Length: 278
Ligand code: PXL
Image (cartoon, rainbow, N blue to C red; front, side):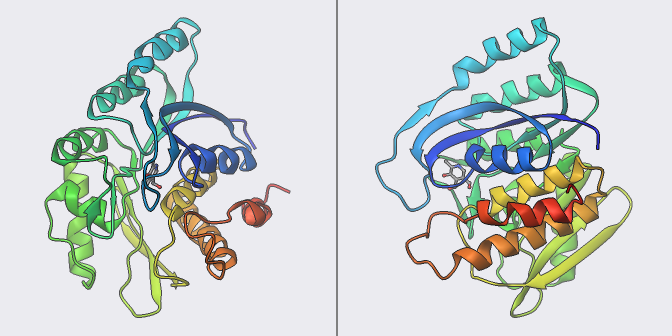
């Protein structure tokens, strides 16, 4: 396997098993050199805890980026998640221009909404700015709520193939080359991933093991990036990430004290096996 250098830009939620505390271990387990740029530092994530602290690191980004450019540091992939501010989106676009290696794969998880609602920190201005970042993505990894906000589509919990196909086509019209849409359920008890690539679309269906666990979007995106950078195709990476995420949910769902994230650590060996890394 070739040794790849990835940059991931997202927050540090000190407690909560999301963002960087998930991406860093998963990408490392997948054999990647994982470099990080924290967008903000929070005491916990914002979904379910109250009174969390929030330190915005937007103003640190230009100097970090300049230093990397002076050192000629470049990345084989840049993967972005939860960002700290609307202004930061412009800085991330500068990173895409300035610290990408040849053939750098730009992966954007718009991490801003779920279950029909924006996360507390975000508003319409953020959504508008996020559209411009999505336009630069080689691969966009939204859930259905994010896809609806980004395309001005009515959010539905029941839908058909046509609704999903149109949603992903509208995301591609923003400029993203490939859309990997998560949480797409056409049948009771099942959910899956709808992948709309440059030339063809594909759907991977699997059992729905819970009605939504916090942090699974970040686990999914990180495993997807790890698999893709191990030279899996986009669809193979989408399937591996789904199978891994299901395993994480299975070992977490019966523990009511663990409502804030999934126990992704214990099943990392399974992910490594799926990638044939051992
Ligand atoms: O998992 C997405 C996420 C990441 N980071 C922070 C969050 C959330 C979701 O709520 O609050 C800080």
